[in-house]
Image (tube, rainbow, N blue to C red):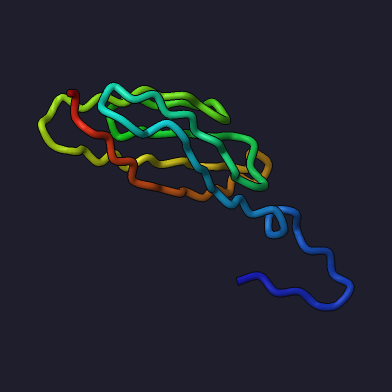
Length: 103
């Protein structure tokens, strides 16, 4: 834990710790479903997405198409890693997206 006394400068990397976050639209209806991700991360300039289907992206706001070839709804655990390249600090955020099977 970092502590400081009055008048001491706090290093930037303690002030600008990344906060990963995202939302999405478009996961309605049967597969294949194209989803638009909106990155709401703060204090980060590098992004790594894992869509839990073997695909990844380094775009800030990617668009991704999910398939579900099963007969049941399928969960995809989407993970965003947001990194501050200056400090090397990062945070991960994960959310489950449910994709319905093909008609």
